[in-house]
Length: 141
Image (tube, rainbow, N blue to C red; front, side, top):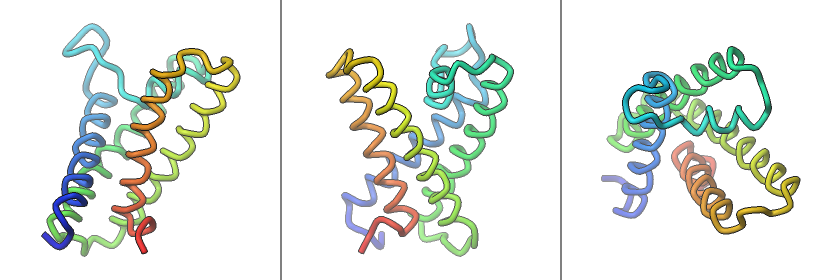
């Protein structure tokens, strides 16, 4: 373990979160399984896209998240010789930053309704974003 236990657990949790989000986006169908949506589907519904467009983007983001989760776990295990690994994690961080900004804009437009639940989600997504930056090598000294 090249990092401390805190960084190790931080990266592990984000890697697992991305794997789960990717799996939800790719494999869970409505009415089957646990019936949960991926964060990507929830985000895209706020843009009022039609269902077919949402499905295409959910699959694209799901693949990116799943691969990024695998990459973060590989990086944690010291397998960082894959040339695109850190760039892919950084791309997912950029997507997550856009997600946070869109969430903030919709929160402001809604007049700060549901303050505490929205603040909780914002905090979680900010933790994911910061973890992605750290895993990509862009968020550390």
